[in-house]
Image (cartoon, rainbow, N blue to C red; front, side):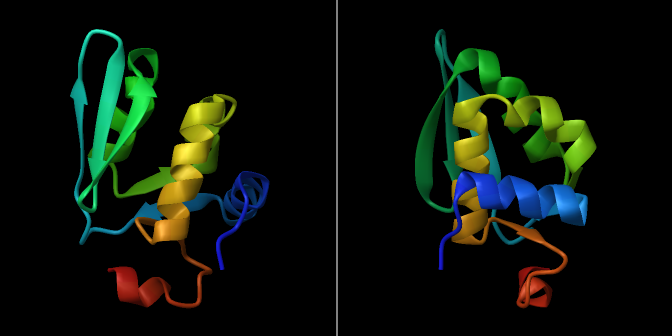
Length: 102
């Protein structure tokens, strides 16, 4: 069952570390005003000024809540991360099926 952005942020804060499913590649293309994000066969659009969040996500397989906290204040970034979580692209170590992501 999908969770809300608020629930996602609360879970991440409590669990400290978010993991990226290594079976899914996240890429992005930076254009003049847009950051086009590609993940799991889909594409997503963010404003170009938020590409730093996606760049961080592409580089790391584990992301700490504290390191990413400033990005969570940006609605589009928080919503995209929540969507990725709901799709299984991102997961927490406490998720019941976490071992299926590695």
